[in-house]
Length: 498
Image 1 (tube, rainbow, N blue to C red):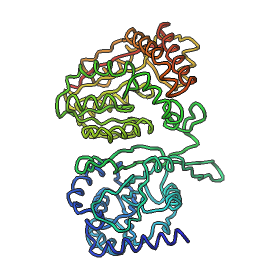
Image 2: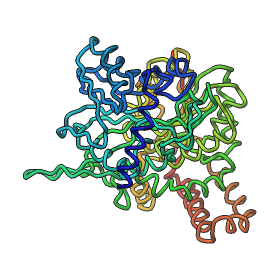
Image 3: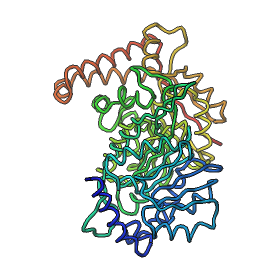
Image 4: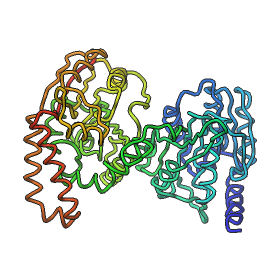
């Protein structure tokens, strides 16, 4: 009964705001025309290739996105709640290609399983109750073909439009609510011959920069997720089904991140903290207006430094949702407009060729199995004359000690010697490659951080616990021992694209 009342209120709300079927009504914003001009290309650039695909567009409205989706996909099914919006969409866009226009309430909508390659929705989920949202998300998994994509964007925390509303039925959830729901879904599609379970993998999660730049709003967020087999994904330590789940629940759980930051210093979760960041960044000779991609950005300390000091635009990407949530929180607090963050997998992310002046990565690529393939992506993303700077965990020549092998297995790291790492860069086309073994510097940094831990022991224990303090100190001590025996190395790599 309560949900039925809410749907009736929602119907009344949108009937009152769809009488003229204008973009201003649909977006609840007097500046809708200009916002559309900028956000359309931004959102469309984030979608996977759609050639030959069947797309379901929910909350299609008057067809802001429909016309572009029709131009890219094999077939588009455009659905909206309001008849006036559907009529306008059909009138303006039905002649552009294969499309079907449906007026329906998404809570009552149904399609056969495996009907679509992508589900696309903009400003829809926030108009559903929690139970309706969960039910529709489960339908998304059913309707999508294996390997298919879900893209959605929502207003989080607060309203973005400037229309004054006496009543507003939207649920302005936190991004964490959507993250939690979507990543925990599991769909059993087993048949008589095979057990098959599916879930959503996060491909991309980020703030829309149109709203940051035009309104100083960080509340417009979007997600790109992919339907994947859950039962055949490599199992990681502790039984986690995906590498991202392992990171966010174990090595990079929020408490673990803040412990790292306490050791490395404010804003940093990489070797040497701010001093090492400044040392390495300053060698890049960054100039105002350049574009930097930070792969494995952590909580964003290095990105804020680059933007504030050199006036460069920085895109920080990380696979850990917890890392990026902290980075986003701080970007909002500090109002650093030149920096944006996203949850994404560098091995799956797509960028046009030659868009960045610098690709920068600190102690992250140790997680990546196929490093040459990733380096080929870096090479293609860099402009001619662009620079690459990487620091990373490396290893000594085999045989390794059993303790080091156990450590590698437990963390899931894929390590190479500094020399081999440099050879990979040369093989994919980079020039002026410098592969430096900086293990001695690493050792000195670890010793300095252990000394700092001793000096702030009482403060650390008060903020965290004795157990946390012991875990950090023991971890750093073991790291020092691995380096001193020669098993673990730390490499620094520079290269250019000619």
